[in-house]
Length: 142
Image 1 (cartoon, rainbow, N blue to C red):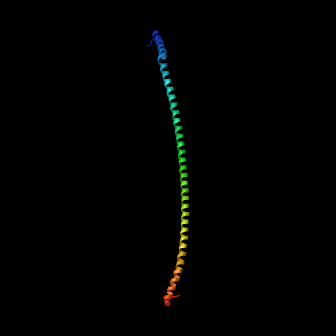
Image 2 (image 1 turned 135 degrees about the horizontal axis):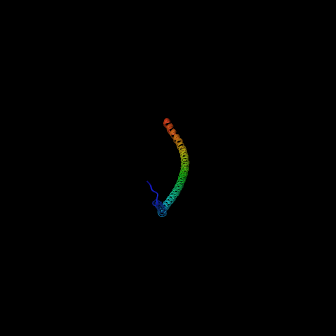
Image 3 (image 1 turned 90 degrees about the vertical axis):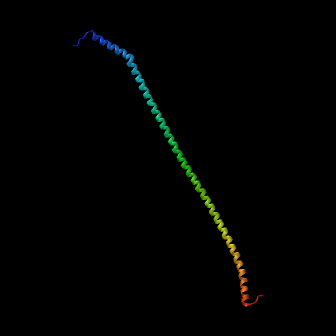
């Protein structure tokens, strides 16, 4: 059976003394270290979240600038293309005008040559007619 005597009281006192000493020397420092560690981990997590947010913000800004650059490049491309189309139209208009002038000049020269040839043919026609008539009549006209 269990006897209650002074040894039990000494053991209880020894237990509380040991508890008090261990609490001061071991438990509180360990708990303090664990709390500091938890605070550092929480601080590191917050810092990592802040850095992640900064990275995401910078990536969003980069994407926005990249999209703006793409839009600007597309506008420049369209502008350059329009300028090219306009230059092409001007060149083609100039070439058409020059071709029309050349055609008009060629027609004018052709008409002049035809008039000159017709005049020459009329003169030759009269001379040939006279020769034919002389041969038919067998004499020369005076």
